[in-house]
Length: 301
Image (cartoon, rainbow, N blue to C red; front, side):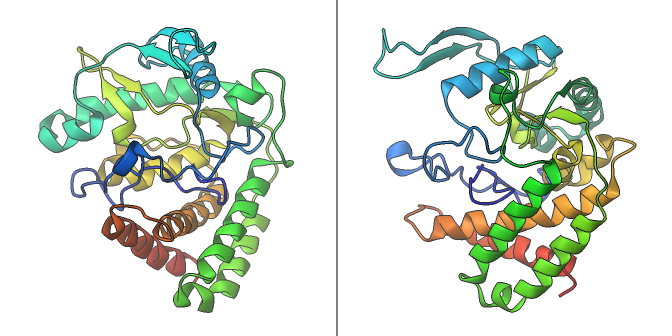
């Protein structure tokens, strides 16, 4: 994720996987660069860019302990003994992603989404003592800040600041954005439960095993956080399939705040990429545009 804002996923779509083809991944293209990467990850920031062997192995081990399927880690080496870099070998799952299945075989969607719901129930039944990245919290560390909602508010306000200098409509709506963020935050009541979440869970981050079971990938961002953070992203990425995943008991105040924050992040992240040499600017512009329109609506503009 982008370190500057509360939610700027590395790969995102503007709609349902059954109707929208995701743009090229920002980790592809010339020189195999990771275009989202803005520098070293700050382990104390739950939303900092999630990459690296330590984050991966910690997330893998936590998911395995929780009984959540992910490709099995077969070998990991941080000593650079065999390669001039950190190395990991993981189980090969050659089947479709869930995204590909939902497009290719709509009749298989109910069973696949039912299995996905069971996986989420297992994942979200696990909690941590504090909010933050699993790699930090499970080793006794603590994140910056005092609460999940505080981190989201801070990130959303940074996003507003970023996009206001890049888009005239965002500049005109800056005060409305800031007022909406603070008003929504005021509705959120304190909470002590910190749920295990993937953090960036779309159907493209789920592979299917040979027997059709879902397995999570792109797991380095695994964290303990408010579960509503997961569900606003699920709603965006699963589109019309989301109803099969919706969980009872979600805090609607948090959903409203985190939804606005997510859309602001999906404006700021793509616009930031467009300042550089990202090789697929049309897709990024489309993501920024659709999310700016939605964020303005949510802010009452």
